[in-house]
Length: 123
Ligand SMILES: [Zn+2]
Picture (tube, rainbow, N blue to C red):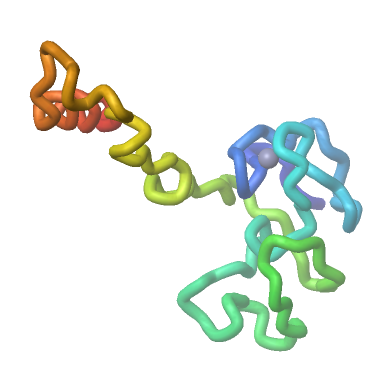
C-alpha cells in the first residue's frame, strides 16, 4: 500500500491527499496542473545518481517533469522543493523603474530608490 500522508505536488507544494492511489498516469495537480506521474515526484528520483534515478533497471526518463510510463514510479512524500528566487522573481529593468522622468524627480536620488527596492525584495 502507498502512503498518502504528506504527499505534495512537486511543483507548487499543494497537498495531494485527496488523490487516489495508485496515481493515474495523467493525474494532475489540482492547483498548478503539473503532471504528477513524473520523476520529480518519485521515490527513486535523485539528481546525485546516474540518470537521476536510484532504480538501476528502470528505463531512463528524459523529461523529469512530464508524465512517464515508468513501472517503478512511486510517489514520494515531501517532494516539493521551492524554486530558486532567480527563477521566480521578475528582474525589474531600470528603465521601467525610473522611466523618462528620472531626471525631473524632486526627491530623486536614484541610488536611494535602488536601496528601497532591494530592501523590499529581501522579504
Ligand atoms: Zn501543483
